[in-house]
Amino acid sequence: MVRVDSRRNKRRKKWILRIILLALLVGIGYGVYTVGKQLWGHDGMSTASNQEQHAVTNVAAFDLVAKEKQSPTMYNGMKRKVAYLTFDDGPNTHTPEILRILKEHNIKATFFMLGNSMQQHPDLVKQIADEGHYPALHSMTHDYTKLYKSGSAANFIEEFNEAQQLVKDATGITTKLIRAPYGSAPQIKEPFRDDIVEADFKMWDWTLDTLDWKYARNPSGMLDEVKRGLKKDTEVILMHDRKQTVQILPEMIEYISSQGYEFEVYDPNAHFPVNFQHDERL
Image 1 (cartoon, one colour):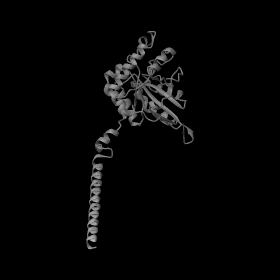
Image 2 (cartoon, one colour; image 1 turned 135 degrees about the vertical axis):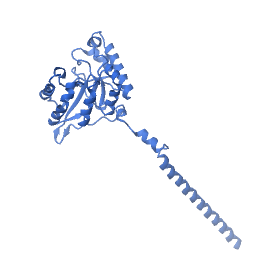
Image 3 (cartoon, one colour; image 1 turned 120 degrees about the vertical axis):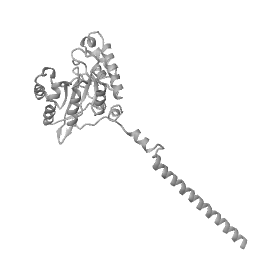
């Protein structure tokens, strides 16, 4: 009887030792896991690597496939009014001042840039994107004969493809928004538009022209054009990177704001058609 009890006691001791050893192993394993989790992050990458992977710059954000932007159509019980400031023919020596004014007013705009100008000022192309404005395209040459008189859209598409590559080289963005020099009407007929659609571009004209080319010596004339033409709930306002634009832009921003408009930048994930031909494909 004593021998049986002795054997039972030995077995109990062995089981107790095994349980204690197992508990120690589990405790050590959990401790290693906790320390590793803190040092390396949840998915096996270092914390620094995680931060780098998830950091999205203003430039990269334009190329993300994001959910379509949901802009409210009503605000405080009233229909929302939105103005898109757009600037053509840059970048040039006037662009830095335009960017400064926009930054002071916390406004993002859309720049339809010429390829020849981008080649001369790639740093400004990058600055435009880095500061949250949308880099769009306005051909390489702005040459009416070359773009529209060849009998096809080939030269037009070729120039916009080339300009698109310049933006991508400077910013990393593959922009698809274009503005046809001199506007889409009357020169861009349906077969021409078919080719633009096939090339996967979107084309914006404008709803309000400041006629800045007329007011080199009278910038306030641009503001008068805005006061006469600002009527729609959504306005796409045409300007150019010019001296008179720089001179009147602060007053123009103040006036547009006073009329209840908010300012927006073009969003490729919330595109809407703005073309004289009323072509919904563009």
